[in-house]
Amino acid sequence: MDENEFMLEDRIMKIQSTIEKHGEDKFYISFSGGKDSTALSKLIDIALPGNQIPRVFFNTGIEYNSMIKFIKECAANDPRIEI
Image (cartoon, rainbow, N blue to C red):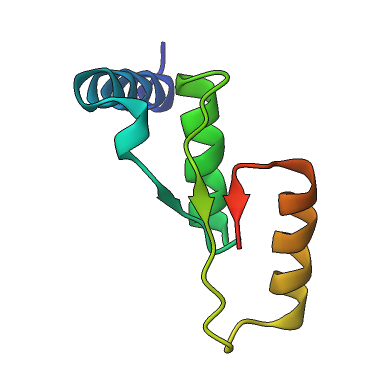
């Protein structure tokens, strides 16, 4: 196992233990549609298959149209995304 695989496994275990400790219903994910929140959403799905943690997008009015389009496409395929 290389360093990156170790770090990924460590993060997955941390997510699992945190959710187990507090309960899935205590969490929301801020979802901007950017690379960081998209990666976090995928990482949560890897750590907790079948989770129902809401991904919340708040339109501040300064987002690029292409970002809004991407978020709406994601929301059409994932009912956990709340706009």
